[in-house]
Length: 130
Image (cartoon, rainbow, N blue to C red; front, side, top):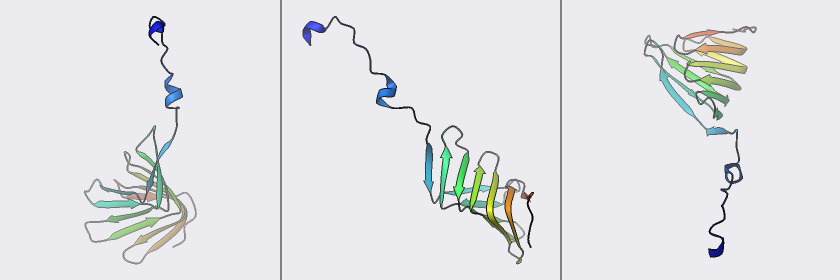
């Protein structure tokens, strides 16, 4: 080694040490809690979720469940087989076997439901069964 001290030593390329990865953060039993614009609490949970590394506010979920407690005492719950939650926009999109429940006994079933959590507005473009 001593006689070779005058030679240039090339650094090891970063990709040889840490290969570039476009991965996701996997979350098991995630729980998200926040407040609507009217300061009413809501919670979103899921069995499993993935968070994109390039947009950490976007969460893709399996078996998501959302609950919202209104100041009037009414509770709303929504669930689906799949879902996407944008934390920044407070937007929850539920897909496949979606059920929306009202604490007074109303039940709505559909295949797609978009919920703007901050505004407490839900809509769908698919048929609904009540």
